[in-house]
Image 1: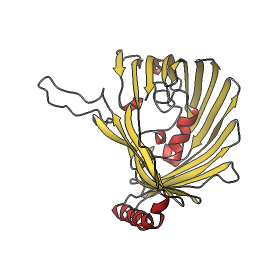
Image 2: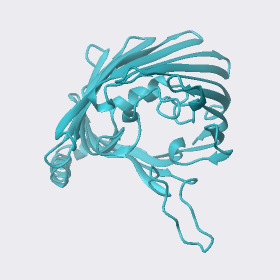
Image 3: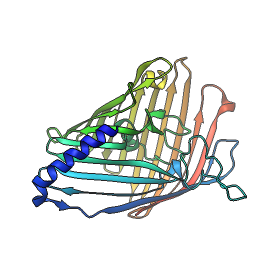
Length: 331
């Protein structure tokens, strides 16, 4: 990874003197998201206030320099994990939960070069596999998201690190739009002698978007790469939106997962429902449903209320529910 970064820096420095006369520095844009929710997730859980890791609360900056032939750009984003980093009575910090990265953690952070032949980025970034899941899920980063308790999307849409939805130590290439419609992506995650990789294609067809994506992650136990595949899309028809995807593969234990969503917007109010199921390798079928009302209070401020039910197999006693009310504010 260090060699890749050094090569990238040498290229950037080499072209700078040749194009400095055309350089047009962009204004650095500082942005962020505050997301807080009151939730009850699981029948045996208590009411909780969450605003951190799973909610996407973040602070970031992005910008670049347009040199004419190429554009050098960057993104740096920090997550603020305000609810999972515990402080003991004596003031000392306790260990965070297993899935929690700490009070402040790295999110998408990369540097890139963009030109007429596409864009190359190096750093930490969301994979196309994850990004397309976010694109079709109206409840993403809430307790009703498909990758959460409802389990209608695989774990490849979440986490950060080796073989995760946010891929660290990664080189990514995106083509420019082909025929004004298609874009192709490929990413390569440096992981010693056993790299992970993936990519896919997205098609923008006006009111509809269609995608196909794959990942191949190294499995230490089997000493081999295991892949997962997905196909999906979304379509907008006036006030109505429909979306969905299907995914399967060894990387998700050969499960077959179906996610669907529908929304109806009336002015500033959106009604959203999701549903899906998982058929595992043993043939067991898990069903899940979610519904929410999302009210825009301003251009960058949304409040929401919703509930969901997950029904694993035929065991009624194992059913889990979630109820929540929350607020998202961008800046």
